[in-house]
Structures are given as structure tokens and as C-alpha cells.
Figure 1 (tube, helix red, strand yellow):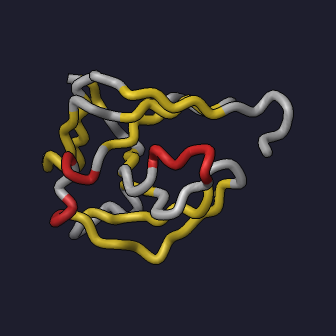
Figure 2 (cartoon, rainbow, N blue to C red; figure 1 turned 90 degrees about the vertical axis):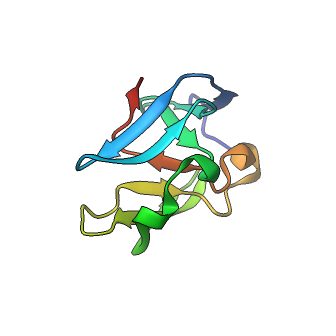
Length: 109
């Protein structure tokens, strides 16, 4: 149960989202999930099929969000670290983001 005033909304988007890190295209999608959470900027969660996972290595980093669950992180081979995260087992209220990747730096094409 979220505290009063805290809200998470998820909707299917059609924006053309690209993720480029160190000149490498890591992800490109026209079917992101847009997650709007109280107190945070809207984040794009991209389907794993639209992410070049072969360029990413699982990291030892994990964080816990009381509203979404435990996040796992991935680093770009050769750096930087922890460029993306996902929720392998999200809370039921945000189940739509399961296994979708979110990146710190995204651009709209």
C-alpha cells in the first residue's frame, strides 16, 4: 500500500526512445512503458527485445524500492557501471515493468 500522496502510473508509449552510451547504441524502442512516480521524472522502461543485452553485464548492485521491489543493475562492458536497471520480480501493482530495462540517459529520436 502506497503512502497517501505517492503514486505510480504506467502507460504504454509510442515515443521513439534511444539509448546511446559512449557512442554505442544500447537500446532503441518505439514501445516504451512510461512510468510516472511521485517525486521523480518520468522514466522509460524498454522491452528486453529492444535492448542490446549482449553489450551489458549484470552488476552486483541491487536496490530496493518500497513501491516497485528489488532492482537489478547492468553495466556496459568496459564501463560505465550500472547504466541500466530492471525489476525481475516487481510488486504486483507495477507488474507491467517486469524485466523491462530502464536507463539513466535516454533520448527521444
